[in-house]
Image (cartoon, rainbow, N blue to C red; front, top):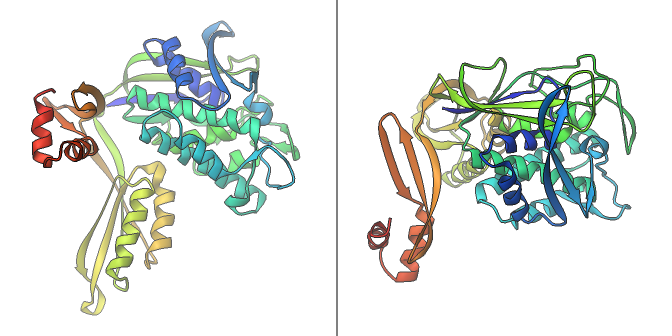
Length: 398
């Protein structure tokens, strides 16, 4: 499996993650051009060489309105007051991301990561998520980092992301609300359930954006697995310490060709078919890999329904909250399973009927190619033919 291992011995920040991932690409500068083509309003990326303690890597510069903002300086400036001007709500950020020129999967990931940030700020300030307002410039910098990391992970076609324990740093950080302990409250909230330590460096090493990205993408935390590495990237921070201030990303093929997933199950006997259907819809939207139901008999021979959800470990808390919110269950069972999968990638191809996307799956001595259903339906509508005839038309040109 194509596996990414992140060494977070000097914490994690959005710009460091983006720079490390850019270094893993065959042409980092072309990757930066692609990031700039995404079209984040008033934002421009640049990648420059950086050396820390004799180690060469790259630093990702994010310019907002022509001025570079440092994540460590503004991450804590998220506000929940209404009297300030030039602030953005989570819905406004989601709208901005939805309008960007990038795959829908990347948009979905970026919005989900920013939702984690909003949830953390909501918890810290004790207000509803809809009442959270983010400082405009700092927010666009965070959006840029999040979009860059989501886009690069998609482009690198990563099967699993694993990370070390996270060094949060220690001491205090100066924020808009005053002097706060490290890790900052929002960071501490996001790092729940993740192995962390403080170390000896008195500085904020892990930011809220870095924590949100780790929480969303990392499947498991711990020692580096056996990897046949193909590339190594170093994302440099802006500060200098006695230890190299960098995040190292190692890309390779893991010796274990399996994928860890969780199976979450619950039984209900007091829900209507409409309610179960709605719950399944919400579970699918929450990031579940698969959702299905099965008829069962429960206590006192009552007919009931078993709801089964397959999800990645880092999506468990989200899926559980949806299960409890949208079903009548009072308990959920968990099974940890291994899943064997083919490597998958999306390839775009030009045809007389426009650009189509093909899903190509490889591994275990087989290859499967399938045209995306949305493209088949579009061509069937345009040509006034059946789906089967649309497939035949495309097969002639693919």
